[in-house]
Image 1 (cartoon, helix red, strand yellow):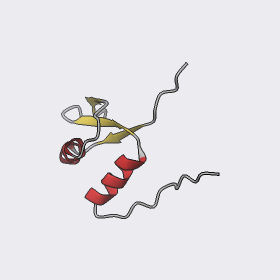
Image 2 (spheres, helix red, strand yellow; image 1 turned 135 degrees about the vertical axis):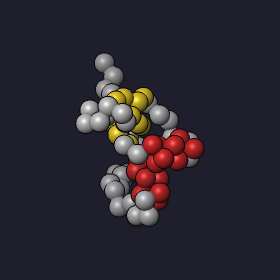
Image 3 (spheres, one colour; image 1 turned 45 degrees about the vertical axis):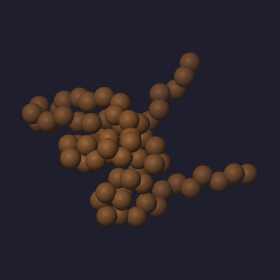
Image 4 (cartoon, one colour; image 1 turned 90 degrees about the vertical axis):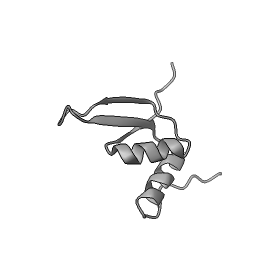
Amino acid sequence: MREKPPLKNIYKKSLAIQLIRMGHDLEHTMRNRNNLRYQVFVFPDTQELREDLCKLNGQRYEGERRENH
């Protein structure tokens, strides 16, 4: 049985649109539980997604580094 990939929720529509334009795949959308007028945009959680999120928010990505042994 395949394990589901981790997902990342994005709550800001303009940020989700920028990520899609950058080539990231939108997994699905769902209603925001706290305010039903809004959607939550769900993306596969990848290192590239996190790097681009930081770039768009003016931050530097300092996530996990994968090393080969």
